[in-house]
Amino acid sequence: MKAHLIPTDTNSPDYTRGKVADAELHFENTDGPLAGLKLIGFSIWTNRGPGRAFSITWPARTYSVNGERRSFALLRPLTDANAQDGIRDLLLAAWRQHELAAGLIEEPK
Image 1 (cartoon, rainbow, N blue to C red):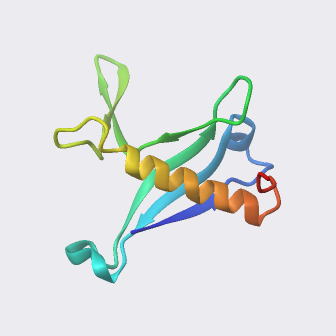
Image 2 (cartoon, rainbow, N blue to C red; image 1 turned 30 degrees about the vertical axis):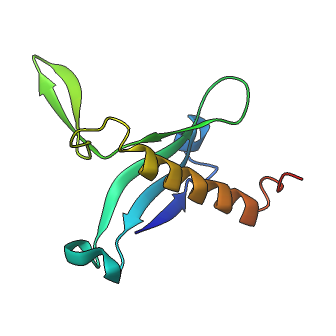
């Protein structure tokens, strides 16, 4: 499995709201029945406030109940609530590599 990023255009309204990239998970040949597929719908956002913190939004489907919009997460843990941490860490590491390669940040010394 590999993270693939699509950086947000800096002129986009999404960018001004804090969205820095869309992200996909690409499943490679060693991933069994998922080989050759991708899971889309992730986004990377800057957190408001001090420091350089980022958050990830997950693929979800929206629906309405009595006129109120809600969302249903499409990727959820079977039992362990921390199971999503691995994917979160993978996407954040990919974003950090993108920032380093683009010269947006410097490697810490």
